[in-house]
Length: 127
Image (tube, rainbow, N blue to C red; front, side):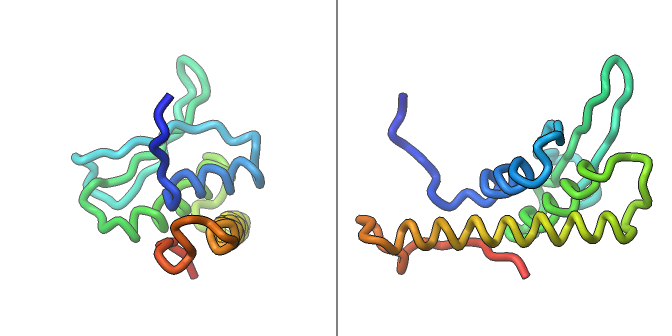
């Protein structure tokens, strides 16, 4: 097993946030260089229920993080709810808050005597 590890991977943090808040969500996520829009969530019913989230590789990195939160909120509420209605907005905000909370914990962890120190830890907070 390798000793290599990202310490500030926002995608891992987002997956963790959704897993804590909405453990029933099941989705595949992929980067798509041919995607025309920023992101897309597709719900497939055949041969089995599956959610596919795609992110454009043409986006700036910071935009990818916010776009993934947007698409994860769609995956949480499902295909039968209003696209950007009140429930979707609430889920979006819940994910964003949990994500930022997890980043705070990461910052605290690296501020407590860690060899690299929190002054060099770059985190992607969302507001």
